[in-house]
Image (tube, rainbow, N blue to C red; front, side, top):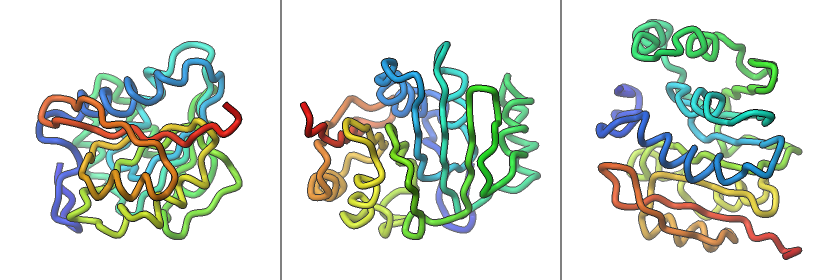
Length: 205
C-alpha cells in the first residue's frame, strides 16, 4: 500500500503480516510475557496492523494500553478496501473507527489511544514497556531517526523496556546507542537481513 503524501509504501513488499509478526510480536510483545499489563508506544499507526496483531497475539490474562502516533491518516475508502483482506474484518474496522486523541476501551483488555501528533511534539507521564518504531524509512523521514528523538523515546520508556524497528542501518544503531540504548541486531523476516532490538538498561540489575 502506497502513501502518496510521502511517496513510499506502508509495508514491506515481501509481506506486511509476516514482517509485523516477526519484528514487533515475536521479538517484542512475546518477550514481555512476565508483565500482566504492557504499555506500548507505536510510532506510525499506518494501517493499524501492529495494533490489531498486538490484540490478537497478546495471550490470555494480559492487558494492553496502546498509544500510537500518526500524522498521515489513511482514507475511509482505503480502510474499506483493506478490511476485505483481513479475516478479522470487524475488528479491523472498529480499530479505525475508534476516536482520535481520546483513550478508548477498544476491547475489555485493550485500551487504545490514537494520537494525531508528531513524535517531536508528543509528551506523556506514562512510561512505556515496548516501542514499535514503525516510522517510514530514514530516507523518507530522516528527522525521525535522530539521536534527539531516540533520546526522547528513551526517556519515555520504563527500565528494561524494548524498542523494535525494521531498520538496521549503521547510523540508526549509532543514534540509539548515543541515546542510551543497548542495541542488538537480530535476524530479519523474509526480504530483510536484520532488524534492531534496543533495550533501555535496568540500572537496578
